[in-house]
Image 1: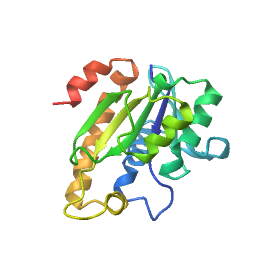
Image 2: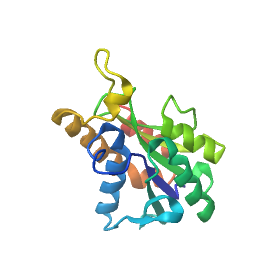
Image 3: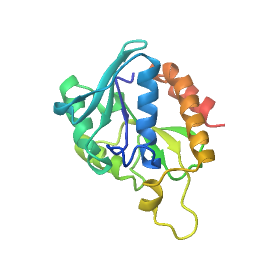
Length: 187
């Protein structure tokens, strides 16, 4: 059962529209859909809130910058005594094209520095991941430049569609039906 949903991104207006903020886009849409206003909470190093679906679920958007996301996740997980297996981390995924969304249980960080830091801070990679496809850079563009740039209008629409698909499955996912959600999303 998921008790904490974390949307990864970078804080500040300079990053609001960048691909790396797909996790923030998700968490903001989720909060808005449930009438939740995320508020800054210094002890959790992020914007936080809670929604009530099948049971209360904490929301977190770390304000530590992507590479230090684990600081915020670990602080909230420790405070509320949430084990890694009850955490869902939502993040951008280079390995999938825009519009693709996948669930993954456990695993490595795949080069994603936000996941790397969360794993280091929690001492475990045993959390769920909601991976929102952003695609890979074309040609010789550096990955860092790509993820920190805004997507094209069509890519942003595809990413938005992926977020909507994921939100439509969220209650089922929170109820612990991970395989069923995988079957719905992984088509």
